[in-house]
Length: 171
Image 1 (cartoon, rainbow, N blue to C red):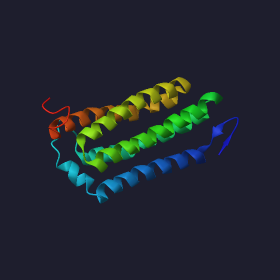
Image 2: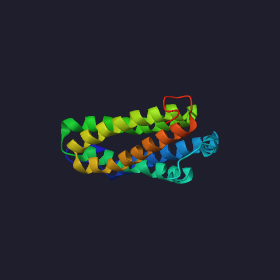
Image 3: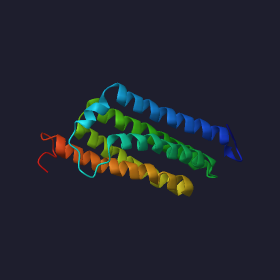
């Protein structure tokens, strides 16, 4: 695991990468097994939106950046910030998984947009704090933040195009 001088080793990084891949693969499998991918294909999407299959592949790769960021943050020399960064990054992973569960589980674009907005605000906060503690870890978190930004914009468009009875109906 970790010694006090050097932080977690390469075995810990491999465990984080395997855990992130397992989580992403499990969520992808859940989406296909429950018919959520079939449901999302029926939604009206903007012309600029990538196919949902491409988004699924990107969504599988993004957690790997978070895993490496966690490992780097734990190796940083700032003892007081290691625990905070670890908790922020762990909550980022949990929040991203919850965002997927809310959107696809409820099958409601409006609720999915609200989850995406909450996740975007949290990711902005977490990326900033982690970036102050460890610059390399913060830079790696910009990839998931950019992904969440794209999901936020896409979520708004999906809500606008598919939920006429919500607060975005008619926009």
